Length: 202
Image (cartoon, rainbow, N blue to C red; front, top):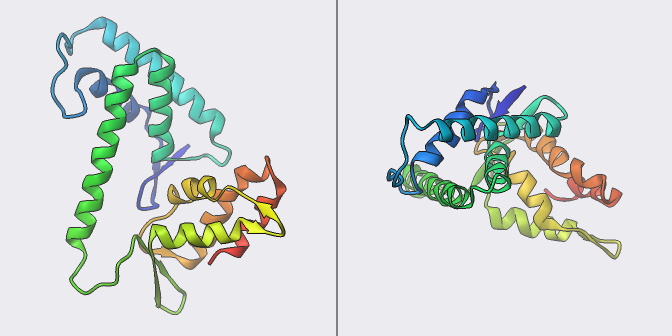
């Protein structure tokens, strides 16, 4: 199995990274401060981490149909496993930590963007070398239109959530087409009309 990073690249799946992230979540809160009473030598914490890691890996293996899993899906499964294991405080801090990291990535991207460059969240590289600039709002509005055809009301938010996990800045036009197909594929099982959605937006 391989992991899809946020920039779209594939790397070998590594369960030890999941274990390390969960272990850190038990030791430190969302601000990186050591939890009262937490100890790196704690046998009980290590046992919990091992069990939760095994649960996450098992769930990911069941969910991965093509041998790949997105980094955001991995983190979603960590949250879910922590909650199901009754570690609600750890899960809450993990969610807050993820949100802070997402905000930092957004701020960094805004800082790195040269002055005068068109506002964007993603750019699509066309075969002729041109670029299409997209924001999340643009994608969602287009999706909402695509989900309202033939008196059918699809859920644009569900498609959007799946699609954002597959997009990255600088994605090629062909990769964007594949991302749209992959984002709608799981929804087709619940409503075949979603099969038409990928072809109608952008």
